[in-house]
Length: 239
Image (cartoon, rainbow, N blue to C red; front, side, top):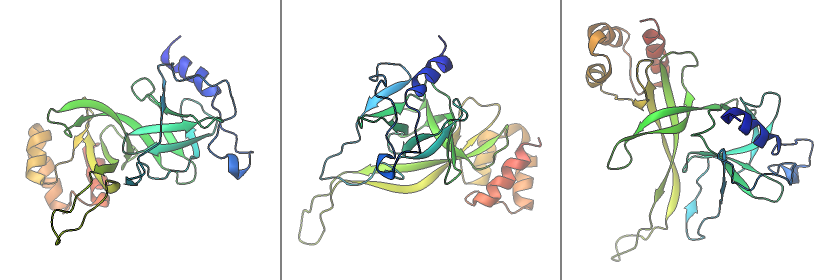
């Protein structure tokens, strides 16, 4: 059975019913849900230490969401931005995370109309750069070149007071500014967008450097402004 077929079988067990009362929102219908031993789902825990403030989630509520591999169905989903995982919850309150390395699905939250897509990207959070998969929103909906946004929640460890002049701070999860990536059609992975225009052109567009730099200058493109990045992506898609 291929990956998508296995995923469909699994998701049929977790179909979300929005005809239930508001108290049941976030719980799926079937008690026969697999116990997390399928490669497409991972049993996870949302528990955190009571000493840690903040949240790993953009919203801790499970919200109405459509999944591209299951058209016509609606599920209760929430996005763990710290772990970069999409989570579903069944009726016994066990929470499962979709394995994004096996399932390349688009998650569209029906209320906000925001869609999350899986892309390979170059991670530089560790000492050694590596290509991993993650969830992104597209700034420009049409490709083949994309400007991508990545929601970020970071963990900040506890800060202990060492004198009478500084203030102790608890460990916390904090939503920080979204990171902007660029995914080019001829590149395997998305990379963090360089906001210095000369460095950007030299790094990614050596063969078209003059044309692209000319467009950026003549159109006064600011690489930190979303509206300008949409114009920039549209120009790249004409080349």
